Image 1 (spheres, rainbow, N blue to C red):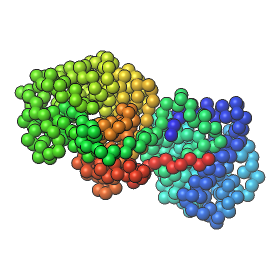
Image 2 (cartoon, rainbow, N blue to C red; image 1 turned 90 degrees about the horizontal axis):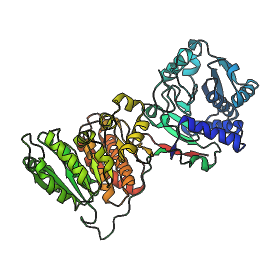
Image 3 (cartoon, rainbow, N blue to C red; image 1 turned 135 degrees about the vertical axis):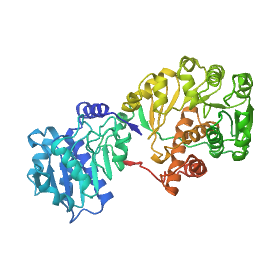
Image 4 (tube, rainbow, N blue to C red; image 1 turned 45 degrees about the vertical axis):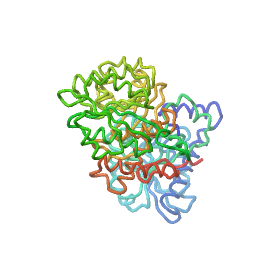
Length: 524
């Protein structure tokens, strides 16, 4: 599903109204009817129940007025709590304001939240129509107090388009924001609906297409979309370990035993066929105790216990037989090993996935990545992306999508930006927002499990870009399954590793993720 920016959605509105003749009143009516449908479906029958509707004086408030009309027509009792001067209503919102004034609907201009608090806390549910996606400043004054009252009420909350106080483009909280149980968004999800922290505040997200023709949603200029990874090809009846792919992992150093183990084992747990691990010679006996299914290639060591530069030619020979090479997990920052990474990246002519300490090595010489003839996958967190791109970590966190796009294009690589929510960027400028996963996965080793999972998706038959998207999704789903069983607190990379086969099974069977937020089918 495509994800639009606020400006892209405004452009769709203008095109629908000006070029297609779909009036603003029709669009607002469809939005309000969809929101009413979500209200009924999510919070129970309307007749005989009382609802508090916080309405601002923009188009979002106009949507709320439509919802109030439908509650009244459905046998419920709407209470409109108007925050702002109604003289500021314009267009279709103004039309709906004039309509509700003539109906037997109680309207309370909000000047003091204390006077409306009893009506709010005794309502069946609250409809949040204070701000839409156009909010560009911090919520203050009565609006801030209204948000605080909604959050403190203990009542179920339905937000229209986006929880009030969440920035429509970045997902940032503008001073304070509503915590919704349900959000119905109009046209397409906005980036603010799906980026943290806004994503966590929206509850279950439902989408209403409000009569836009499909061609508007399919516009190639909308380059951000949800990570709807394609299904894996079926495993052939004649499959054997050779046909299910061979990957070489170049990983590990003294003191870093978990990283090579998790990356090489996760490839097997996710369905890969043959996992080869090139690690320092002294580590191999310890790794073999936990990973007896792995084929080990002991490497000569530096004095610090990392992989020595002298292994270069042997590693290049091993790489020639692999479908993909993974470089970086737990390699260390030893200067000689960092030089080895740079030389391998320049010489390997196979798909290469670079993670962890491998990213640090290449950040100093990004031209190696730009000049590679074979595809490259990078899996940085925000700090590593900052080093790769020359931006600050603050700039990355403020504009994750923009930073990812620029870096993926500049380095001619597929880039997975890890964090509270993983994003995948392609060199062509497409960005995929992953919806699986949870905060419990913020634990050492989780990224190493991701590298092996991506490699497995590639050797199982998906094109590389689709394999990266699939690997990120499966990794997050495994984390969701682990959290559902064990809770998020104390979740380990080992827990995620153990649940990978279950995640693969669910995905093969077409079963939705068991935990976390997701987008419901569109309401037309």
